Length: 463
Ligand SMILES: Nc1ncnc2c1ncn2[C@@H]1O[C@H](COP(=O)(O)OP(=O)(O)OP(=O)(O)O)[C@@H](O)[C@H]1O
Ligand SMILES: [Mg+2]
Image (cartoon, rainbow, N blue to C red):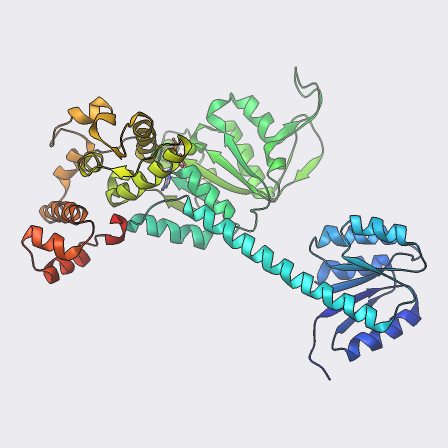
């Protein structure tokens, strides 16, 4: 017996066709599943995938076109070959418009049928491969948008990868501009919800009752001005993700409703009586300390526990300064394209100024600054005169948050910090050539290499 080639599902009401096809296809190495009616076929499709489905359009009971539609709804990738009784080619063609792969007329030659099935299988494997590639690409792009090779960012990537495919609620905490929304989108893109909506809720921008009608929708006449029924954001996000930007701005009352939706996965529109079920993954972001708000009774503890199943804490930019050169390069690339400017990079002294700054607005502030510099720049490199004056006026040792922090760091941490800076600068001047950098510092190349490893200096980020 030949090896099994896949399952063919035959849907036909005539027993004789069942017998003939069963024998023919089995002898060719296919596994055969038989259905005598559309109802039976749909039921089988909801519990199993088939390589190819042969569907007779003319059956008593459920109309063939209805069966086709039903199968496509359950499994949009199903490969269906239509069998038409006589020359009712017209309905076969309309079936193809609805996504059938091909059709064959009764009576058919066995070879002819086998050929069509083989072609359908090839088509199916190409299609599967395409979907696989497209998914991989989506995932890759979601990650490529997030720049960072520093250790804290590597941990963030691992967290995203591990938690994205799950259903868990995620709380993203981080200062303004650290990339919370970016990470939320990456989580969505890396989950199997990626084909469904990613809905952003900007609760801070809305008064409480308006927020509720946005979230849950309302029926006609629910309140003055509710002239027609409106679906809420939760419904829009069904099967996708709903992102609560700055969750702390959701009012206390609405928090209770939110908690109920999370628990029951259902809700009612404002003024409505019908229960609506939704399957939306909740991702929330905040730049405030929710636990402190809980103490002040401004945030519900029970909601916090529900949200805080997985917490992703985005480090401020000043705590991962190794990422600055990479981010600068990334944003130069984006904005030189957008502004059609031929800019190749940034001068060392400017980069040094950027690395010295404490970035209270984090990556967003850096991004804005690079955009401005690219727009203002008249040469191939971004130079000092494109920086905002306040950055140039700073003197080393100016009191800023970073400097304050250095005071509380240990002697060892501070000297290591300084060593990394000296080595990074030397490496940069030497365009990443370690031997040359070692010479300029009066070190043996092996010593420099050992220090690079010990201080975890990311040499690749220099290129
Ligand atoms: N690691 C990163 N790599 C590349 N771009 C980033 C990164 N982090 C943030 N950005 C960019 O910085 C800007 C701000 O990011 P985002 O809006 O995600 O921050 P946020 O934490 O949501 O800020 P806020 O709290 O102010 O809403 C965006 O343009 C984003 O693309
Ligand atoms: Mg944001």
